[in-house]
Length: 145
Image 1 (cartoon, rainbow, N blue to C red):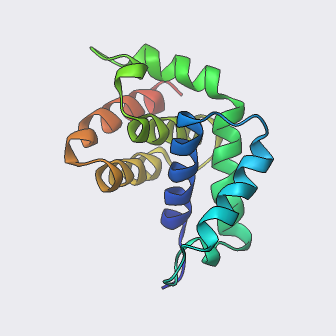
Image 2 (image 1 turned 120 degrees about the vertical axis):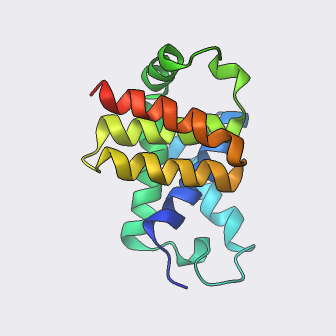
Image 3 (image 1 turned 30 degrees about the horizontal axis):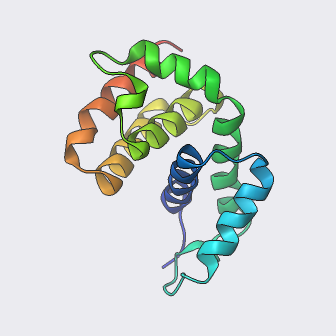
């Protein structure tokens, strides 16, 4: 199995979830530590050891971008949450929403692609009930830009 952008986004969500639970002081060191920690766990193709070149950079770009703009991204997400606060969301949901909002606001990737990928990631890591909140918030982020 060859790694894809989808897999790179999965790695980014894993890093962002870890960063949410234990905010890093040095982001570059944090990212490097992530790759080192998961390298020993990687048994099948398509895992973190398969993160090379563009896909590794793709994952890291999301993590560094989100963590660098986290205050602005959190403010945008918080503004769009209806009946919820950012703190009430699970760490996975926050990570997926942060990454999706960052991609919509900072990249030229088509908004429907970003939203669809984030819905799939939320469903995969959290469960089907998260689909609607991820879809609703990211759709609003996309319409605002």
